[in-house]
Length: 150
Image (cartoon, rainbow, N blue to C red):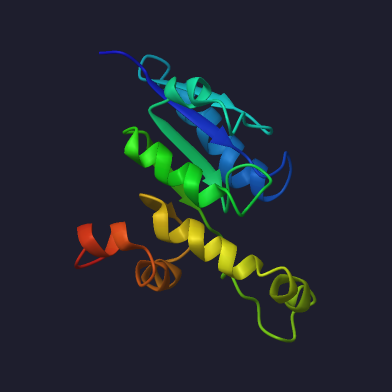
């Protein structure tokens, strides 16, 4: 059996990126070196199909690359190529009006862009069962494949 090749697109090297993307995948490769090969990239070659073809799975936090607007197309293309897409989402996409980032999120329609990525990703990892149930309402793959629980 050949190794499963995973591409991790971490959002950053500290905080969320470190603890939700980097550390778990480094652990996976170190714990199961015969089964997994993990590459970590902070600047993916979004327009290069040969770049994507070398992977079995792409894991990302909220989006692929810096341009949220093209990310759903990339995710759908990866899905059609048989590459498993896994979105990690640790916070609700639209903070409450009293949150310091609320107006910035709404002005840039960031919540809508995150939702667009959520809808087309094959799998979603998250923080709690309560949040998983909320995500399930919007992710068609999860709705179709996990009728009971996420």
